[in-house]
Length: 352
Image 1 (spheres, rainbow, N blue to C red):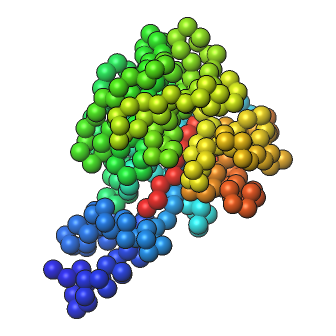
Image 2 (image 1 turned 30 degrees about the horizontal axis):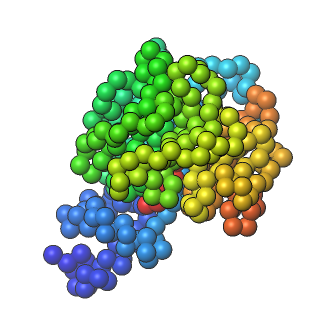
Image 3 (image 1 turned 135 degrees about the vertical axis):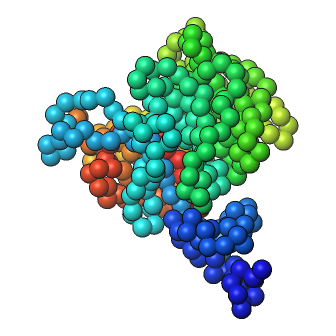
């Protein structure tokens, strides 16, 4: 069947790749051939090569306290987190539908990772009793629906490192179990096959580490072992899928013994992080101070040549978003509606 009756298929495909991503669900419901075409990995590749793909940023963000006075919170209530979506090209903000069973808010410190047209959400602590969970949910931007994935295997873990190859696999490493024992184990979730694969153990235990996919390898950065409890290390390990082995990186990978949660890949083969008022490249090639409007940065999100820095604009006030262009080394303030100025725990960038 022709994609569009009366037109050659290659012309029909050129029309279809121009459908905005937020209308994929409607387009896929038109007929089976359109749905089959949109679901193909080749469709995403064609859309990308033609310059039709769009980047969006998904953030685990708290809803604002309803008791606000000119941006200043009157008092702190129990935060409720949701998934906010920011589109850099249009400046639009929106919110994803809640995960089934989590209408009252996301688990604290859950992790998010981009995989093709999918967003993977996993782990975290229950807002009600702070119990850890190994759950996995996958949101598909074509069907605009959630599905339950297989739970992370093994003991329940929290504060682990997590990253994806942006294609089909999500990697997990480190964290701690329910007894607060730091872990050196790792695993990989194949989203297409919907299965988990156990990785070899890392050389070191790494609690409260940061995961990043960098130069084709899964990096687990920083963290600390069970005996150190909060005294962060500076080393990193990288898992190479082609050799199925971990590689120990230099002991001073981070440069300073600090929490690595803001460490990200910038999409330019360089890793960056926030340290004491400055965004620094971990290869020492670049550093720049954060905008004066920001008091400090809580979350950094890499987005192909740009970094989104989310931070507070003063004690007790709402959060602001700035974008750093890694080519021009210039900052740009993002216009943020008040309802999307809550605290951001984590986030990721998808190309759709």
